Image (cartoon, rainbow, N blue to C red; front, top):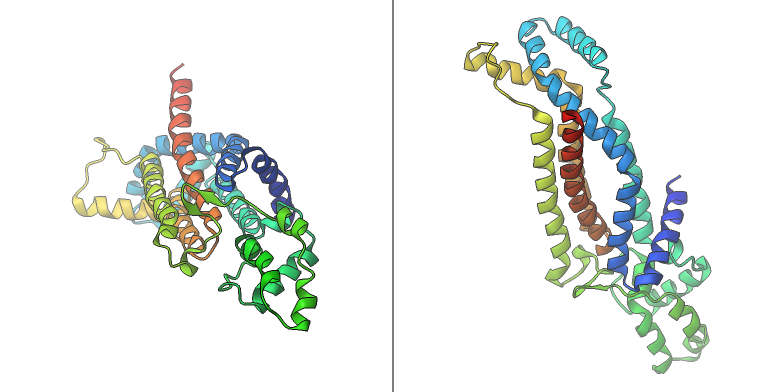
Length: 309
């Protein structure tokens, strides 16, 4: 499934790349296309989020009423979700889709020669072996990225003095093969073939840092849209009781708890991977996060306008 998606995305990304001739720009346009295709799921998720916010007042009443009876609280919460026709675990679909996309794009960015350029694995292995044998650069853990970065140096091997055994191996260097693997990885002065933790260039951390900032903004937006924390004048309670209600709300509201966990988990997980993956992956996530903010603002207004009609 993941391999199939990575291959499919590879055809799309390569088509865009052939048109714009820049890997970074191709990734941005690819991200926009994927976001457009995901709009139906996003609309459904946003509507569910809106319903959940509206339901918070009723939820708080139930939580306050049964604060000393966890069993009745759980039962009443389930009944409320049934009455409002909301699936508390509907967010799982979005999470699963995000995880599948995460893995597919990771495969794609990790191995662009396989999934984008459709290069013969034997050819890839041949040049990967040369890079190791002649120690052209520090290995990054991503053989195909190493090849793209070292194409010119591989060609230069033929000009170096070598022994007879090396001459035989270097005779396998084929300019046509190497040219077919060339990709313009330069994007706004950044080399998208770099791996932040393997690079001595501080600029390699710019995109991951921007991703963290945008993710925090996106996370705060999600929290503000799902919290629905408004003062309820009909419920009079002490500060201690308020704290208890909020604690129980978090404990017995599956959707709120799941959204909170997801909003914390995904940025941390993505950042950890972005630091050890080619910068192209971080650029995809950064673009996706920016698009998500725009999407949420647009859908929020659209859904609000529909409700007012």
